[in-house]
Image (cartoon, rainbow, N blue to C red; front, side, top):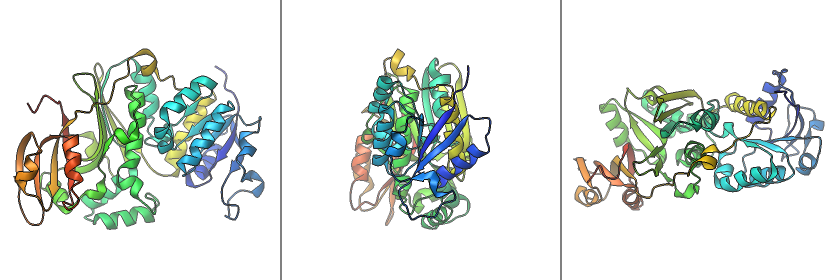
Length: 403
């Protein structure tokens, strides 16, 4: 198959955009060049001549010589408008904006089908790990049962520093910010939103399941306290923020983002610092594991380059599980075994919200209950305003297991 030449209009020239430019300059075999770069701030000093830049999106979107748009900006709403306009005029798009895609997933799939243009976004999930392409192509004919991963490098770095170097969560966060792994406003990472948006994309390619991000249960690492971390040390466990989706016996999908206790025999145990790791389990090929750098300019740029290379061969996602199978639906009845830590409530009060209680600890000011409950009751407990509560996952269990 012959490779076509890509003339690229780039939106955004931050660390990933600059990394992309440098990687493209060092990849002469790839028939792709950045023709124009659209940026927001006309006063910012940049590393390239001013004539390479524009401040007007139409200079890229209305240029017939530009056949490919690469979108690398922070503003998800502005990114959505740019991507939608590009697809409508027949320009294929590469994006790393997981929030934008997750919030408009179905619309963007339909738009691709209507226009024939492609939207690729490998860089939106796990940076250097080609997990979306694998789910889309390799697992298209093998019934996927389970996918679980550390998909946010910033929180993994913070948890690694907390566990390995005994830093406080706040000190670890400040270090991550100083190194550029976490934003000055870290809520997207530490509250679990980034991982949730990525999980929404994984659900689409793993199971053909399209969901509103608000329907996915999430607990971030911002709730973690010393009690849970000390429990992990005593039991020789690590705490990792994981995104999990698994097929229930009834065919529905359980999905959530939560801190999880991970044991030494789990491949995710050794995934530290800004690395990401993803486990899959299928009906025939059983368990597989992917690992790689999940943050930083060059890992993300390498994923963007991979998508650009794919576009040069006219590759596009076919969303095969939606085309050839009945997409699985998200279950509203998800049972989990968790450690629930709280203040200002009695163990008896909390235990009444659990179907099975295997361990309790009553103290002042903090106590915990370990047992099996469902996500609805867990959410209710977490929203108790004075309880300063947190929850750490052990495992998702089948809804009938507690009966």
